[in-house]
Length: 488
Image 1 (cartoon, rainbow, N blue to C red):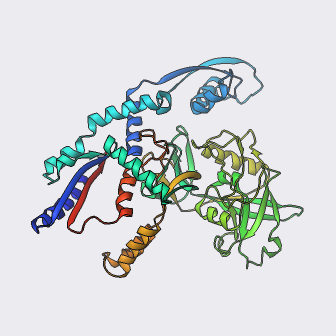
Image 2 (image 1 turned 45 degrees about the vertical axis):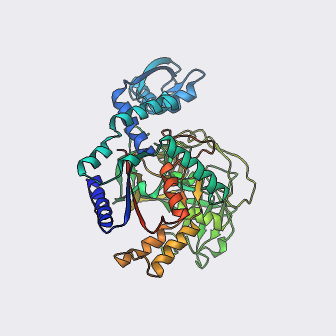
Image 3 (image 1 turned 120 degrees about the horizontal axis):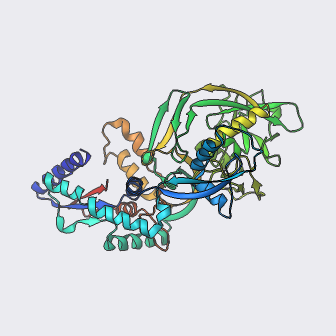
């Protein structure tokens, strides 16, 4: 339906200009759609391939693995091992047993099992089988495209153009590499654009499964309050969050500079319950904090929240990435600064939390805070949950090195065109959206089904379209439409 709607509009425009005597060119082409294709092929492999069985030996009822590769196996097959271990112990919680037993666990084949080259073979096989469907649809619709110019974004000619464009833009300073907060899908192990994020409205207390976490359901849209103790004082500061697991990366608590309740605490240090050597500083921030809401205190996790990220930059706070790329709590972390200030020691995470999946960590953190007498309450709170449209995974904001494009020049031209009336946005209320769109765009994606370059650039389609945007409009007498579609 989407292809038919778009093709009809584009074909009508092309035919109209052609009938007016304009020189027209309607170019057909398909995009490799790296993330979408990767996701589809992985699902296909999961259905077609028989499960891989692995024999492991466990000891006691805790399910601890034996052998040199025990840690690796436990990380990879964690949920399968824990389920098998629970079946073995029959619900017992006695950890004193020292018996050993071998168990057989089964998991589906993933692209990591196959390796990059083998996985690419499956991708190209899938493309050969299904890749022509879009162009077949266009032929059946009767679109007046120039089929002699048909292109696929990973054809050799297109790949050369991408490499050339990338080198030129990089040398001109238009394209650059920087570490920024991105939308990260732990299931895909990739940064994804805002357009690939769905926002779900939750009423509060809803149970959901999460990719990579087995069949366990976790509670979302819950407001959890806990306390930070003030160093060398009996006072405490109470904060609240819907993402309790991120408190592992807290480096500050923000209060409003005009809030009389906390004026005596400005600049004071707080005790982190799990990291005694970490300084959690009370900072003042009238942008992040609304003193009329909640307790008037906001926990700050700069490396895992967009608003906290900006607050961290304003106050030159240390940034702590507490999750690995697959969504596990790290074993150790070296705090860093995006402003270049500070030299911070490595922090080792407690064994009870290190290696846990992020939503299992949420449960464990709540339990530990309760044991320490720091839990202050829990209530349902409506919220918006960001979900990856490709994998269904819950988005994790992560600071990652990415390729970006300086769109200052093209953005200014596009905005000026609307302001001076040479370009009209209808309805007019969407002008605000137009102005908001023109910001630097991330090009980097960790996709296995995309050609690798020495520069490690990905995102061919973005570069091809970027080239047209930066070079400027085509000859005024030529109307050029590109019939590009993602392979689905």
